[in-house]
Amino acid sequence: MIRVSRVISVISGKGGVGKTTLVSNLVVALSHLDKRVAVIDANITGANLSVHLGLVQYDNSLNDVLDGSIDLSGAMYRHGSGVDIIPASLTRLDGDMSGFKNVISNLVGYYDYVIIDVAAGIESEVYAAVSCSDAVMLVTTPELTAVSNVALALRLCHNMSKTVLGVVINQIHGDSFEIKSDAIGSFLDVPIIARIEDHKHVRESIAVGMPVVDYSPLSQPAKVISDIAQNLIEY
Image 1 (cartoon, one colour):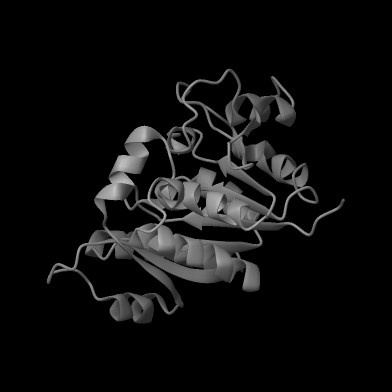
Image 2 (image 1 turned 135 degrees about the vertical axis):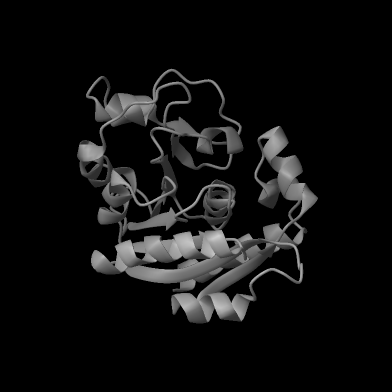
Protein backbone atom coordinates (compact mmCIF):
# COMPACT_ATOMS: atom_id res chain seq x y z
CA MET A 1 0.00 0.00 0.00
CA ILE A 2 1.34 3.42 -0.97
CA ARG A 3 1.18 5.81 1.97
CA VAL A 4 1.09 9.60 2.06
CA SER A 5 4.25 10.24 4.04
CA ARG A 6 4.90 13.30 6.18
CA VAL A 7 8.58 14.06 6.66
CA ILE A 8 9.20 16.09 9.81
CA SER A 9 12.53 17.35 11.09
CA VAL A 10 12.94 18.05 14.80
CA ILE A 11 15.55 20.74 15.42
CA SER A 12 16.87 22.72 18.36
CA GLY A 13 19.85 24.83 17.38
CA LYS A 14 21.54 23.73 20.61
CA GLY A 15 22.42 20.43 22.23
CA GLY A 16 21.20 19.38 25.65
CA VAL A 17 17.59 20.49 25.30
CA GLY A 18 16.13 16.97 25.15
CA LYS A 19 15.46 16.92 21.41
CA THR A 20 16.47 13.30 20.93
CA THR A 21 14.45 12.30 23.98
CA LEU A 22 11.42 13.96 22.43
CA VAL A 23 12.00 12.31 19.06
CA SER A 24 12.44 8.80 20.48
CA ASN A 25 9.21 9.13 22.45
CA LEU A 26 7.24 10.84 19.70
CA VAL A 27 7.89 8.09 17.16
CA VAL A 28 6.84 5.39 19.63
CA ALA A 29 3.72 7.37 20.53
CA LEU A 30 2.85 7.63 16.83
CA SER A 31 3.33 3.89 16.48
CA HIS A 32 0.96 3.35 19.39
CA LEU A 33 -1.60 5.22 17.31
CA ASP A 34 -1.24 2.61 14.55
CA LYS A 35 0.92 4.77 12.33
CA ARG A 36 3.79 3.32 10.37
CA VAL A 37 6.87 5.29 11.38
CA ALA A 38 10.52 5.51 10.43
CA VAL A 39 12.98 7.58 12.46
CA ILE A 40 16.39 8.70 11.25
CA ASP A 41 19.33 9.88 13.32
CA ALA A 42 20.69 12.59 11.02
CA ASN A 43 23.35 13.58 13.55
CA ILE A 44 26.04 11.62 11.73
CA THR A 45 28.88 13.07 13.79
CA GLY A 46 27.27 12.83 17.22
CA ALA A 47 24.66 10.08 17.24
CA ASN A 48 22.68 8.86 20.24
CA LEU A 49 19.08 8.31 19.07
CA SER A 50 19.59 4.55 18.94
CA VAL A 51 20.63 4.46 22.59
CA HIS A 52 17.38 6.16 23.61
CA LEU A 53 15.52 3.35 21.86
CA GLY A 54 17.58 0.56 23.41
CA LEU A 55 19.65 -0.14 20.30
CA VAL A 56 23.29 -0.01 21.36
CA GLN A 57 24.94 -2.59 19.12
CA TYR A 58 24.51 -2.66 15.36
CA ASP A 59 26.72 -3.32 12.39
CA ASN A 60 25.47 -0.79 9.87
CA SER A 61 24.38 2.82 10.07
CA LEU A 62 23.25 5.83 8.08
CA ASN A 63 26.92 6.73 7.67
CA ASP A 64 27.43 3.52 5.71
CA VAL A 65 24.40 4.22 3.53
CA LEU A 66 25.59 7.73 2.75
CA ASP A 67 29.05 6.59 1.72
CA GLY A 68 27.59 3.90 -0.53
CA SER A 69 28.81 0.90 1.47
CA ILE A 70 25.35 -0.62 1.89
CA ASP A 71 21.74 -0.19 0.79
CA LEU A 72 19.29 1.56 3.09
CA SER A 73 17.62 -1.71 4.08
CA GLY A 74 20.88 -2.89 5.60
CA ALA A 75 20.83 -0.05 8.14
CA MET A 76 17.22 -0.38 9.30
CA TYR A 77 16.34 -1.90 12.65
CA ARG A 78 12.88 -2.65 14.01
CA HIS A 79 12.02 -1.37 17.48
CA GLY A 80 9.63 -3.39 19.61
CA SER A 81 6.94 -0.75 19.05
CA GLY A 82 7.12 -1.33 15.31
CA VAL A 83 9.14 1.82 14.55
CA ASP A 84 11.91 1.37 11.99
CA ILE A 85 15.15 2.99 13.15
CA ILE A 86 17.91 4.20 10.86
CA PRO A 87 20.69 5.00 13.31
CA ALA A 88 23.83 6.99 12.73
CA SER A 89 27.12 5.45 13.78
CA LEU A 90 28.11 5.60 17.45
CA THR A 91 31.79 5.31 16.55
CA ARG A 92 32.34 7.12 13.25
CA LEU A 93 32.87 10.87 13.21
CA ASP A 94 32.69 11.27 9.45
CA GLY A 95 29.93 11.41 6.92
CA ASP A 96 28.65 13.22 3.86
CA MET A 97 25.00 14.30 3.90
CA SER A 98 24.90 15.04 0.16
CA GLY A 99 23.05 11.77 -0.44
CA PHE A 100 20.49 12.28 2.32
CA LYS A 101 17.74 13.29 -0.09
CA ASN A 102 17.96 9.85 -1.70
CA VAL A 103 17.54 8.24 1.71
CA ILE A 104 14.31 10.15 2.26
CA SER A 105 13.10 9.37 -1.26
CA ASN A 106 13.43 5.66 -0.53
CA LEU A 107 11.19 5.98 2.53
CA VAL A 108 8.43 8.19 1.19
CA GLY A 109 5.36 6.18 0.26
CA TYR A 110 6.09 3.37 2.71
CA TYR A 111 5.54 5.21 6.00
CA ASP A 112 2.93 7.55 7.42
CA TYR A 113 5.65 9.53 9.18
CA VAL A 114 9.36 9.90 8.64
CA ILE A 115 10.81 11.72 11.64
CA ILE A 116 14.33 13.13 11.44
CA ASP A 117 16.36 13.75 14.58
CA VAL A 118 18.51 16.64 13.36
CA ALA A 119 21.96 17.59 14.62
CA ALA A 120 22.26 20.62 16.89
CA GLY A 121 23.38 23.90 15.38
CA ILE A 122 22.78 25.25 11.90
CA GLU A 123 25.57 23.53 9.98
CA SER A 124 25.42 21.46 6.78
CA GLU A 125 23.92 18.41 8.54
CA VAL A 126 20.96 20.53 9.61
CA TYR A 127 20.51 22.09 6.18
CA ALA A 128 20.52 18.70 4.48
CA ALA A 129 17.88 17.30 6.82
CA VAL A 130 15.59 20.32 6.81
CA SER A 131 15.75 20.63 3.02
CA CYS A 132 14.19 17.17 2.72
CA SER A 133 11.38 17.87 5.18
CA ASP A 134 7.75 18.83 4.74
CA ALA A 135 7.68 20.55 8.11
CA VAL A 136 9.84 21.33 11.13
CA MET A 137 9.27 21.08 14.87
CA LEU A 138 11.40 23.23 17.17
CA VAL A 139 12.59 22.20 20.63
CA THR A 140 13.99 24.47 23.33
CA THR A 141 14.33 24.74 27.07
CA PRO A 142 13.21 27.93 28.86
CA GLU A 143 16.78 29.22 29.03
CA LEU A 144 18.16 32.25 27.21
CA THR A 145 20.94 30.41 25.35
CA ALA A 146 18.58 27.68 24.15
CA VAL A 147 15.95 30.16 23.00
CA SER A 148 18.49 32.33 21.17
CA ASN A 149 19.94 29.30 19.40
CA VAL A 150 16.57 27.91 18.37
CA ALA A 151 15.80 31.35 16.94
CA LEU A 152 18.78 30.94 14.61
CA ALA A 153 17.51 27.52 13.58
CA LEU A 154 14.09 29.05 12.98
CA ARG A 155 15.66 31.65 10.70
CA LEU A 156 17.21 28.84 8.68
CA CYS A 157 13.77 27.27 8.28
CA HIS A 158 12.26 30.56 7.15
CA ASN A 159 15.08 31.09 4.67
CA MET A 160 14.30 27.66 3.24
CA SER A 161 10.55 28.41 3.20
CA LYS A 162 9.77 25.42 5.40
CA THR A 163 6.55 25.03 7.36
CA VAL A 164 7.22 25.40 11.09
CA LEU A 165 4.73 23.50 13.23
CA GLY A 166 5.75 25.34 16.38
CA VAL A 167 7.97 24.94 19.42
CA VAL A 168 8.06 22.38 22.20
CA ILE A 169 9.32 23.90 25.45
CA ASN A 170 11.12 21.09 27.24
CA GLN A 171 12.68 20.42 30.65
CA ILE A 172 10.62 23.01 32.51
CA HIS A 173 11.59 23.17 36.20
CA GLY A 174 9.39 26.10 37.18
CA ASP A 175 12.31 28.20 38.42
CA SER A 176 11.75 31.95 38.65
CA PHE A 177 14.63 32.69 36.28
CA GLU A 178 13.23 30.57 33.44
CA ILE A 179 11.79 32.38 30.46
CA LYS A 180 8.02 32.17 30.49
CA SER A 181 6.44 30.03 27.82
CA ASP A 182 4.30 32.82 26.41
CA ALA A 183 7.38 35.02 26.08
CA ILE A 184 9.15 32.29 24.13
CA GLY A 185 6.20 31.89 21.80
CA SER A 186 5.99 35.63 21.25
CA PHE A 187 9.72 36.01 20.67
CA LEU A 188 9.84 33.20 18.12
CA ASP A 189 6.42 34.11 16.70
CA VAL A 190 5.42 30.46 16.39
CA PRO A 191 2.76 28.39 18.16
CA ILE A 192 3.66 26.62 21.39
CA ILE A 193 3.07 22.95 20.64
CA ALA A 194 3.55 21.71 24.18
CA ARG A 195 5.20 22.35 27.54
CA ILE A 196 7.05 19.39 29.03
CA GLU A 197 8.15 19.36 32.65
CA ASP A 198 11.49 18.02 33.80
CA HIS A 199 10.79 14.61 35.35
CA LYS A 200 12.98 11.95 36.90
CA HIS A 201 11.13 9.22 35.02
CA VAL A 202 12.47 10.68 31.78
CA ARG A 203 16.03 10.33 33.03
CA GLU A 204 15.30 6.84 34.32
CA SER A 205 13.79 5.81 30.99
CA ILE A 206 16.89 6.95 29.12
CA ALA A 207 19.08 4.93 31.48
CA VAL A 208 17.18 1.74 30.66
CA GLY A 209 16.79 2.48 26.95
CA MET A 210 13.00 2.63 27.06
CA PRO A 211 10.95 5.64 25.93
CA VAL A 212 9.10 7.26 28.83
CA VAL A 213 5.78 6.81 26.99
CA ASP A 214 6.26 3.10 27.74
CA TYR A 215 8.35 3.32 30.91
CA SER A 216 6.00 5.70 32.74
CA PRO A 217 2.95 6.35 30.55
CA LEU A 218 1.10 8.28 33.26
CA SER A 219 3.90 10.76 33.86
CA GLN A 220 3.42 14.34 32.66
CA PRO A 221 6.05 14.10 29.90
CA ALA A 222 4.58 10.85 28.57
CA LYS A 223 1.07 12.25 28.50
CA VAL A 224 2.17 15.45 26.78
CA ILE A 225 4.20 13.64 24.13
CA SER A 226 1.29 11.31 23.45
CA ASP A 227 -0.87 14.41 22.96
CA ILE A 228 1.70 15.82 20.52
CA ALA A 229 1.46 12.60 18.51
CA GLN A 230 -2.34 12.74 18.49
CA ASN A 231 -2.30 16.37 17.41
CA LEU A 232 0.13 15.62 14.59
CA ILE A 233 -2.33 13.11 13.21
CA GLU A 234 -5.15 15.62 13.43
CA TYR A 235 -3.08 18.48 11.98
